[in-house]
Length: 249
Image 1 (tube, one colour):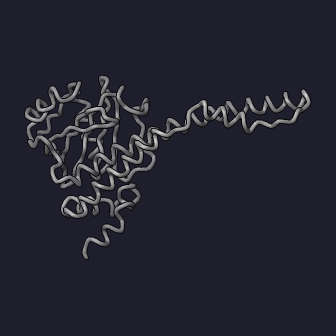
Image 2: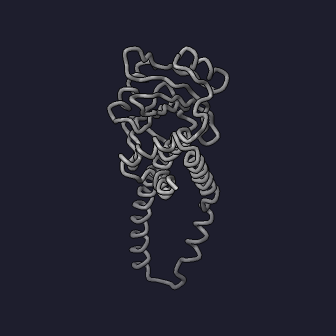
Image 3: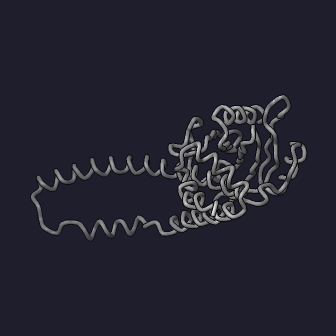
């Protein structure tokens, strides 16, 4: 079967670990193959379900304290040894706290970027990628009124190579947002607009880039909203579309 070779790489594709050229080829195939697009959509939904389930069963601080107490040594030690141990423990605790805070923030950001990529992929795999289909921003923007708890502007695309294909509702952590889809030289680009305060992770650095992602992405905060521009188009095209949105906002 022709699709067997594609299906064998599906999990690697969904994890964003294929080489850039293969990633783009897979994107094109998924958009044109009903069977593979359905499998991709199921895979993305499974990843998101596992990610949500993993958050529900994080050990509590009380559980950690009980474990630390049960593992504490029972034998008595001299004051000097206890003081040295306490000092060493303090150093380890401080270093551990700083490390866990940094890694926790980094892990949360990477997880957020992964969710955005999943939403982009699942849209490409969908048989109906947009809820409102129009190249006119004056048609697409009003469609979101009353559906999301914020307003935003869409850029003017005249004299550019970008084409607005339409928009759809999106949800991140059960919070509604806007998902716009653009086309440039046969590459689809997703633009997500979400309320900054609703995000599950803090993104304070406007120049922050995902560490491991096969798609090109730009993200920034403006007027209390967080924008994500993501796609398999070139980094230059992603940057240009991001600048158009910044200017419109």
